[in-house]
Structures are given as C-alpha cells and as structure tokens.
Length: 152
Image (tube, rainbow, N blue to C red; front, side, top):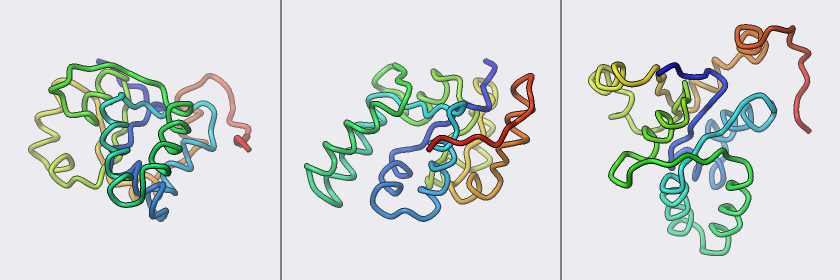
C-alpha cells in the first residue's frame, strides 16, 4: 500500500491531549488544522476511544461537544472491530503518519511488524510538530510551489 504523506492519524491519547492538555499534541494537530491539503484520518472506534478518555478526565458534555467538532474535521474510515483503532485508521486511510504517545507502537519490533503492510511513520506528537515542514512536504507532494497559505 502506498501511503499518502498528507494523511495523518492521531491516536486516542493524542486526540484527548490536544483538547485537554495542549502542548505537543496541540502543536502537532495545529499543523493539520492549519493546512487544507492535510487530512486528519480517524475511524469511529478511534474517536470512541478518545471520547471515553475525555469523558473520564473531564466530563460528558465536553466529550460530546468534542465529538461533534472532530467528526466534522476528520475523514472517516472503516476497519474490522478487532483491529487497533490507530493502526487500522492509518492503514485503511492510507496515512503516512500515526501520532501516538504509546511507546509500544513506536518500538523497533512494531516497526518491523507494520513495515510489510504499510509505509507508516509512528512518532510522538513532539517529533511531528518539531520536524513538520509544510513547504517541503507540499512541494514534494504537489506539482506547484507552496504559497505559505494557511487556514484561518
């Protein structure tokens, strides 16, 4: 499968941290929100997991409001219920990036397991936020020059 470098999945931990904590998770996802040519990919089970974390750490009303907003922002994908929501969203959504705090997903063994099936980079949000270069990615992906234009 050929992954698209403009398609990004954020794990439930990163989605919840974006809302509740900010910091690296917010910085990473702000890159996605700021550029119309980047796509946040997430399955319903992935959003279910993030919503449950938000309900536990905050409250049901905030979680419901977040769910309404994120469903409008993401591109949905489907996968079998037994699949890992983050990995399956990335695979089914042809995403090149999975942002996660889960160290087991970022291990060498996980990388070797994923490699035959998907061209996927799993990294923590701080690394994505720090290394993201909109101009380079845009010019490597599209046939025109990057204008620096951002969503407002």
